[in-house]
Image 1 (tube, rainbow, N blue to C red):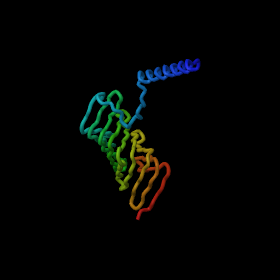
Image 2 (image 1 turned 45 degrees about the vertical axis):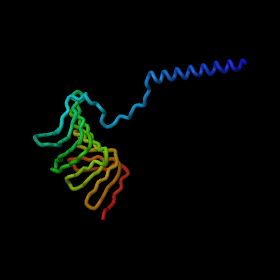
Image 3 (image 1 turned 180 degrees about the vertical axis):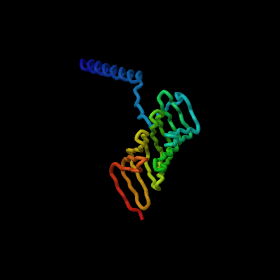
Amino acid sequence: MMWHWGARQGLLALSVMLAGFLVYVLATRVESVPTPGFMPPLLGRADASIDHFTFRETRAGAVQWEVKAARARVFEAEQRADLEQVEVTLFGEKGRQLSLRADEGLLDTAKKDFVLEQRNGPIVVNLGSGYTMYTNHLAWTDARREIRTTDPVAIFGQGWEVRGVGLIGNLDSEEFKVLADVRMDVLP
């Protein structure tokens, strides 16, 4: 009989501990935190919401680049604009253009840097020299006039194709360097 009493006390203590843990979990609402996406949902916090948004960078009266977006939400205190359906044209010193489209982007209005991302399929980058580049993510650093990605990239030219991971490209020198796992194929 004594062991029945001890077993009941043990089970009662275990039940109280489990109930206490359950109350703690429900009270603190422990949830998994979603991984932050490319553009945080900040609806309602924007200082301005603009349809047909255009942002141009000029130097000495010449347009250096232009960003157009179907929609933009501007956050003045954070010096940024969240962009949707983005078109970018970059102008090089030698008169060549680089143009692309992306689903979304983030523009740093102070530094004049931007990051672009494509949700489905690659960003198609058309280089004025006749080359076409494909990647899912692209960043522009205005101070260095440089595009960069850490994602897979493919560049197609006249009769050749280069694939790899990561890219750094200088718009003015028109030099593009694939960073890793480089493979070049000659096309028929």
